[in-house]
Image 1: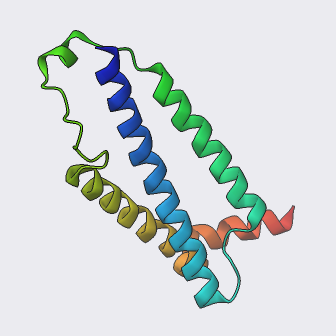
Image 2: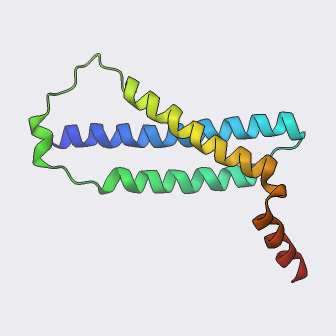
Length: 124
């Protein structure tokens, strides 16, 4: 029971980490190529990585095993750790996050809500 729980937890951890890192690399590279300046500085990337690693490791250690894990067939030795479903989830979530981040990065200055927020910040 514990072995299957650890395997599931590691799979969830990998899926989360790969999604976050794929998005961070694409945003840093694309942003640097298009704007000639990285949208995230090195210290900001380190903070993002630190926070994401901390949250993911907490999630990895807090899920207790259940009896339903024993009803599932065991995984084979040759089964890849990242399955097709996981890869689809990683790419789907990464695409969604990239759309949101690039919208904020390139069209964020044109939105009314961000303009009023930046005005209120500069008046202080």
